[in-house]
Length: 169
Ligand SMILES: [Zn+2]
Image (cartoon, rainbow, N blue to C red; front, side):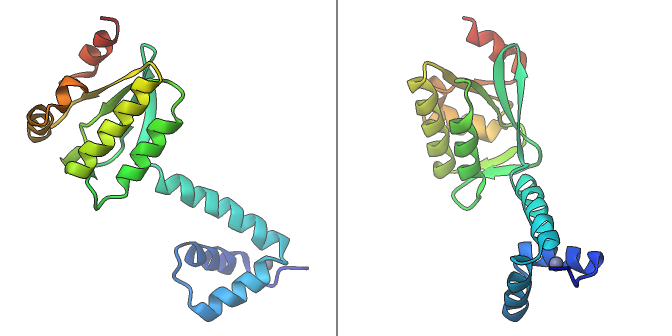
């Protein structure tokens, strides 16, 4: 089947379709079309994976001296209201390395749900013969980690190189 959509129009429809801002009628019309249209089908799949990359782009891994460091690309909250928690768990569980540092430098707020998620990451890593450390917490977050006793399990460091060194102790 030949596509009857102009490329620009197609891009707009796909973008709206992926952001769920098409009307119900337009969704129905588009779904009816793209399933039979190779061009639209391919384009939709490419756009979809780009959109998925964007959605999960607030966290990124790097390796420093053999230790995996998880960083936030933008300011984030580790709270029950933020979808960052699921993302954090997924990132840590899917990480093959069990020696992990989480850089909290861009984390502005943590609540009990966030602390719980850090603890479940910690448990997962320890079960896999690894450990978890955090770096660059704000003074408030550091205080919270100390008050709750979590810092005795998940030590907090003010810089990455100290955290890295602590793995070899
Ligand atoms: Zn088409």
